[in-house]
Length: 79
Image 1 (cartoon, rainbow, N blue to C red):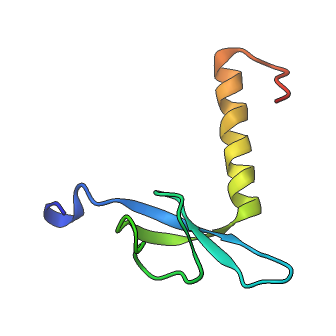
Image 2 (tube, rainbow, N blue to C red):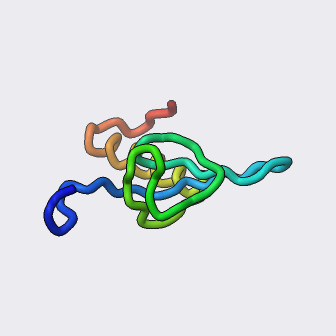
């Protein structure tokens, strides 16, 4: 831990909803899944800023990928 929070890890919870089971929460910093969502990740100690659904996280990754493709000059990448 640094002074005034410098160097501390931050992340957010990624909520996965299941049909026949309880919801699971994945840490965006370490990728570990848990059944609860405390203020800090029990594994890596990252402070959590909020929660996103798995669908919102996938949309965010797709938008970043499209921006990167435009920057690199790839206009019709389908992968």
